[in-house]
Length: 176
Image 1 (cartoon, rainbow, N blue to C red):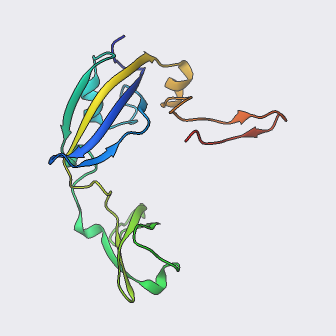
Image 2: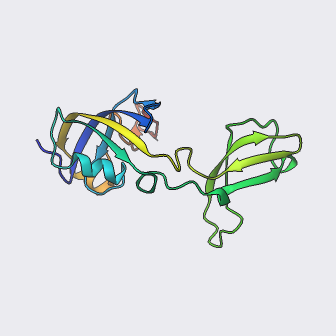
Image 3: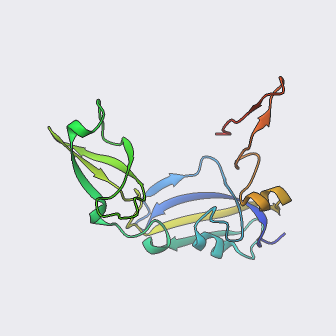
């Protein structure tokens, strides 16, 4: 079966920078609904469109097609007293950039801590980096009507909705 709109694609992948430094080796395969549902980067969909099981490819995705260019204006310095304690490098907080009139929130990561100041970076950790994805297609199947209606994959490695337990109660739980 060829990869086309409304197919579910399973891809083993690794991610590195352009110098070959490994950023992520997918422990689990990426499983996504193909066809513009924004379940993966558009450049990955473009590279896989029309391919089938067994396809191998390494693609380079430039920052503007991945996580954007690095924006120095998204780096904020805050008084340590304004943040919870204890605070550590790598912690994340939701907030808005100072000049954002719409109040659109971002995730800010603590990148440095001084005695009374904390540096918060609202850029995605991979912003400004050209990325290389090594892709290996391991499965392609037709999407279910429900997956198409919801715009994402269900089941193993996909999104999971409410499930009925033995007592007839509904509960939701993550697969990973």
